[in-house]
Length: 157
Image (tube, rainbow, N blue to C red; front, side, top):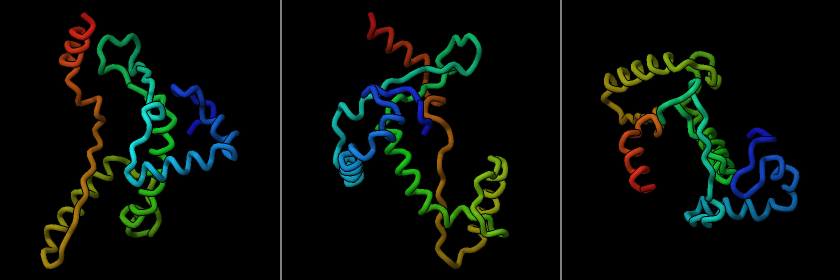
């Protein structure tokens, strides 16, 4: 996370968390443990501000903007979950020939690799096979923006 990023609704940016870590560490770690064990986080902690960053010059539609969450809590939790999943999924992401982690692979390479893997899975019917598909589309790219605008304007009126 960028050290001098914009502060979230709590008023604190990443720099604050880094500088005060010795003081807040136990509380943050305990809150994260509670969250990972299924406890809901307090509403004040999960509050967020959303900024719309234009994807194009002079945007005229919602789809031409990228929403950015300004919530440090979700960033911390997402980073933690990401780091833990990375350790689990590392076995599935090694390059087969060099036995090293493939982090610089292009998306087109992944599509071809997925086709090859699925072909080999269907050809090997003796053993049990598992395939995991992750949707790479962004949620805001699938929103019916006309419907959303209509609801927003009805709420305002």
